[in-house]
Image 1 (cartoon, rainbow, N blue to C red):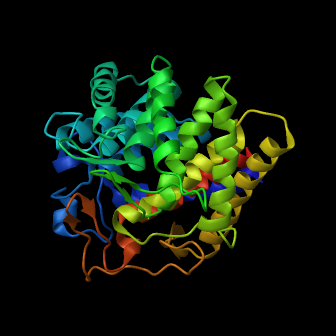
Image 2 (cartoon, rainbow, N blue to C red; image 1 turned 135 degrees about the vertical axis):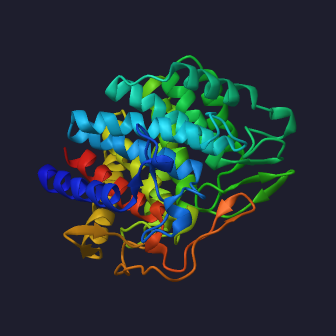
Length: 366
């Protein structure tokens, strides 16, 4: 079974590499993922590039290196890092704490998995999250600088990063406790999106569940505090009941939403393989997380399109994928978020999510 998913993950990787990866502005030693396929001229020139999508592309390359270590992929990881910094005007930071958290997680994993270290970048990003903690303003850390929106998509991945750094466990626990006290729906036990100027933003997205699941799982692994295991068990059950009622994770369209289910699958796989504890409830949570990943991956694979022998995934894994054409509307960056292309399958985010899901399925079967 693990070889089946290894092969499918390799095919998903090959599809993104072939369709989306190219040098930044023709510069040697660089690469980024074009945000759409078939690409427009603007896509090919990286007129748009979407910082956090590229961070997930880097993370997927690291997944692939874990699955199948190859020297040539190490070169691609270095090129991706260099392309990211150059396209970001020579900086690692931007105005969005969630964006920076995703890049920090990818860079930290790159060092751990491949030995490719970017110590100054990690220190720069680490300082951003530590300095952004403002409980006196109602947080948490905010979604972006000079903002009063404190949300799960910023606090979850930033907390995971601080936990993995190992030197800020207490702060990561404070972030997890803030989420648990502020953003958990008492009826469904799902995570609300955030709190804005003191008012609850009640939207419930798959990736909010995923990042909180990842944070609580990492804290359960690294502390002896049982409250984190209890929260993981509760959240896995809530995801199963409300975000994957048929066993398959719900889609959220293209644009930024294209990444949501893949992120959730990544951290379900983490819970399935890393959640400690030997009581029946712990075992059941691991089994449930694993089952959602595998059912979602099987559905996404069955509903893919195959072009030149490589998969093209849809935004909803329980529906047949549609092949995008060169025409049609492209996703636009509006008020801090990227909306979907007319055909969501053209968005790099949707294809990265499918790749992430195949890697997650390999992780839980390896």
